[in-house]
Picture (spheres, rainbow, N blue to C red):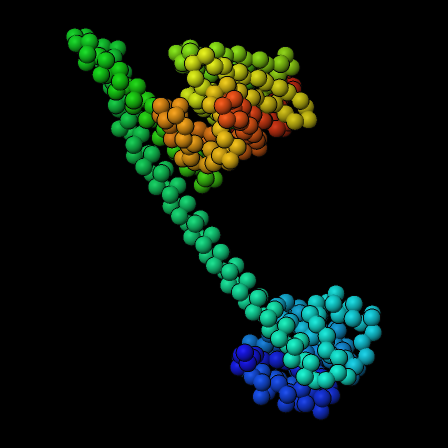
Length: 397
């Protein structure tokens, strides 16, 4: 296949006769040779001055009178890092060869050889140019795709945040009024069937509000707008409070549970409400995927070097190894006969992960199908308060 007619080649050589002989050989083969004799003219040509646009390959003589072709190589590569340069010389010494390669030379052409051998060198050069252009095109396509994906993600997060706000207002009214009716604030209902319906309305509304709050928090986290309201608190009290909420569910599901905390568990400087949200999500998730007769354990650890760790472990259905990364993505759930029996949006673990990362902490998920799952959250050492007298007042992070 003949060379493309759009293959400009810059020839930098103070030997005009040799340069013209090279140009005469290249011109009928579809190349567009441009001859310059001094470094400044070469720099102007590479900059595209005087209409010399599109030069991507340069042939440089190692010695340009009193000037150095190796130094010119550095100047040209500084102007155009993508420029493919070939050094030309009749007597190339090792030191010059090494220095040229170090400064970015792509190949060499021995002037004492048959000039036609230069054609193979130029073929390699333009193959490299083509690869560079294809790589740049692919990179640009990836950049555009990334920007479009980020824009779509921002739009999705904005929509979820807006719709969540819009849904919470009527839901709060539904929950509030149904609770008033359940408590018979304005008088007795009179019909037990209606009372049962109101209880279902209240329960369903509360569940839906929790889902909406999770969506809103996750949207804020993805948009970088989820805030921490830090305080110093005793993690034991937080775990005890979570237990009061989750113990009835654990007993109703036919499960047993335990909490084991070390004596040296320190105070934490963190967002107490979000920490409670993390523990609630982990324990409720464990209850959801553990069959009757199973067990849920909460274990705490403290090391000054690593911080405070809390592990919630269950003996439930577990997660296949190939799906471990999926369950940390929003709205992802792994199908199983047990999981389909329970409600869920797949927001629990992603939200826990986002909250822990906001604290500078980590989440580690370990699971084996049919044997259970353990989730370990870690608050870093800078969240630990060893001296209660140094506690700071509540402040917005």
